[in-house]
Image: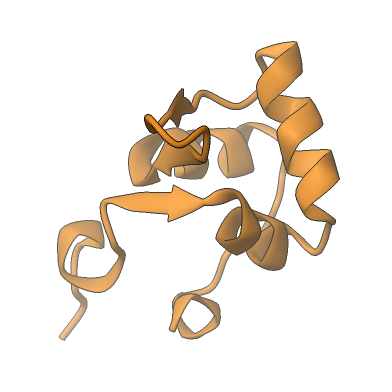
Length: 72
């Protein structure tokens, strides 16, 4: 039975997690955020978080394949 995104993925991703899923460095993810290509918000300690829906929209827009087994 297929699961929806809410059942499979966490709500927010770190820059490290996004980097892993996209096959790039954390610095590249930070550049995407700084340029406004990837929507994120900063926690009080300065760390970035990316909402899962924003990440999937970004991945879809740029043709980045994301598989469910990759997300574990």
